[in-house]
Length: 195
Image 1 (spheres, rainbow, N blue to C red):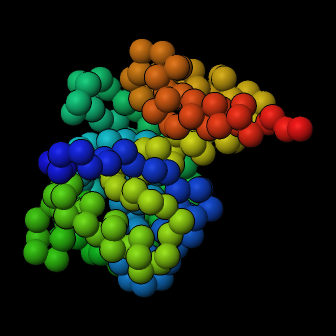
Image 2: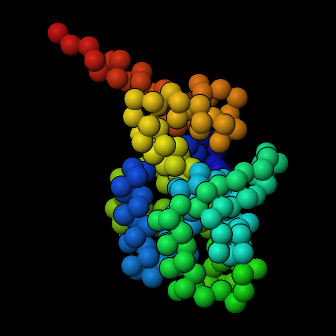
Image 3: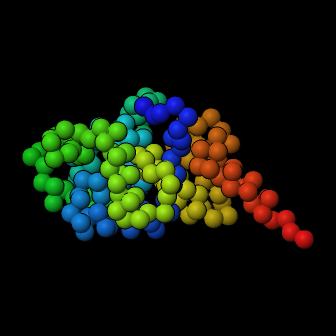
């Protein structure tokens, strides 16, 4: 729950900064949060769906199949090779007692709450001097979307159509606004004027 009149809009991290942070967290032996950021930014899942993942869901498979908690829709996600290697490396270090254990468990043995994860991300923002104002669990989903659009290059409209489907938005206009692209386009119009 946020404070009244407070800003709860998450920003995105550049892909380079996100992947750099994932590597730094791994190097600093913060394997669980490194894995959370990797899965969130590679898959674009909501935190409610990430928190429910067990090791059985993501180990020894090339796809993740789940029913989204918010929408009730089935999502089938490909686990690409770089993420597969990261999952395997994190699993090796975390050493859960069984594949039925949740992936994102605190030292206390409970699944991290969204509130606690948001506090951790704010701490990471300061510790690693990240170039982001509003770093929260939703940042992972926005970072995923921004990277998909960026990789599409001149086919960005097609990427927005795909993202609209992935995110469950009713139009690409909503996806564009969700990713903050609309505001950037408006700012570019103002900035393009000169004497």
